[in-house]
Length: 68
Image 1 (cartoon, rainbow, N blue to C red):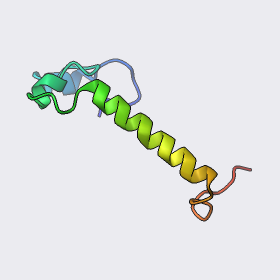
Image 2 (image 1 turned 180 degrees about the horizontal axis):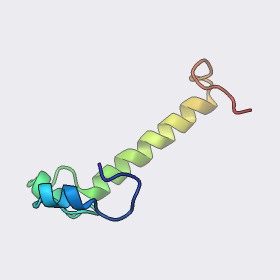
Image 3 (image 1 turned 180 degrees about the vertical axis):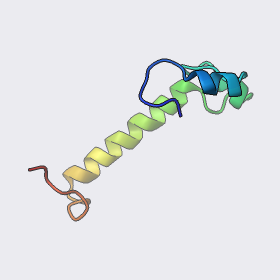
């Protein structure tokens, strides 16, 4: 929502005072900690590994167009 800038969008910071940047808000979003950043990172890694394996096995050959 902040665009392609690394810095915070001032309008969003003013509108959403309870939010923070760089993953510091996860305890407020999920008080029980289900979405810990390490858990999210592990999930993302597994997802990318599975996608890579599927691509190499040719399971996306009809969906992926080669670059020219």
